[in-house]
Image (tube, rainbow, N blue to C red; front, side, top):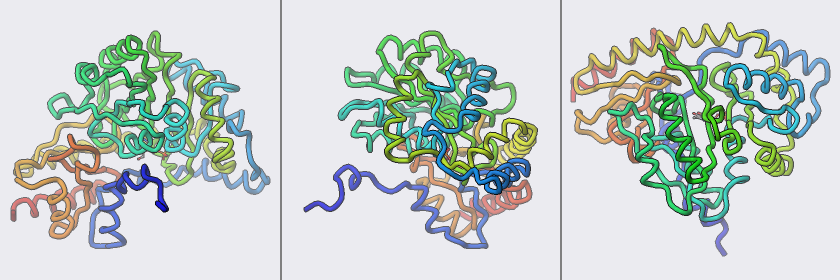
Length: 385
Ligand code: PLP
């Protein structure tokens, strides 16, 4: 008897996890590895969650999530994303974007459907498609295009089986941001080929210079075929609170809700009360984004001063994706030796797909002091090679 499902067996563990098991608790390492804010959750939000406990607001909420929270999300979607979503039937509060992604793929896909995913891309995209018994199809991206997914690359990979596309902007691991024109061309392809867009917008507010975040769900003809996925983990320093949401037409949200009600019931009530408070404290997020921007500039400038390393300037998220091909090493070898000899942890780019080979992902979720120290160590490591 096969004890474990063939699908599950066939999916390897995330390359990030594998790598970070090696880092463990080592104190001599500077980690540019983990993609999570180093800031604490802002005080008023913590206070709101503590109040929720004190007021015994600790029971299950509606399966859809607190109605007040859905109303806030709906207002935010209207004001900032130009998306209309009825708080009663078109928004589902989830356990992070992670759950929203899982529900969306399971609700939409049939066995054998193909889903287009960016390469390199966030590690969970392929895995979620796969666990929904569908087939992920990589859309290769290139450094010279700023790692944006190019409509012509999408077009080449659309077949009769293509059901959906995952849009990720700003993106992990590259920090790429899709322009309005890119999104309009992708939207045209979705409409022409009847595709559903699953749009992961978790890094929406982490965007720099003059870039502007556009939601594909706001474009003409996309309102009925987009599920917008977003959450609070990254922008509001909330990763452990586990709250996200999905917004889309009622037929999608209802189908997702069916799975959610049998598997999760609801997102944690205490965390939902905390998130509700975050809508009144956007100033914290603005300050965090300013600090990420300073770190981004420092890191990218420093990386470009190191021999045999080059780094394009990421436009969003909190990742730089330097090119290390001139060192002659594979991403994995480079990251392993950098860890052992240079005492800096970064994620090998191939963990995010074939097109990530030749790169490492450096998250700038550490202080500027640590970034300077890490740059010095990387420089010393590369010069000794
Ligand atoms: N989407 C992207 C692109 C991410 O990088 C991550 C976390 O790293 C997630 C989703 C998961 O988000 P959440 O913490 O809301 O589950």
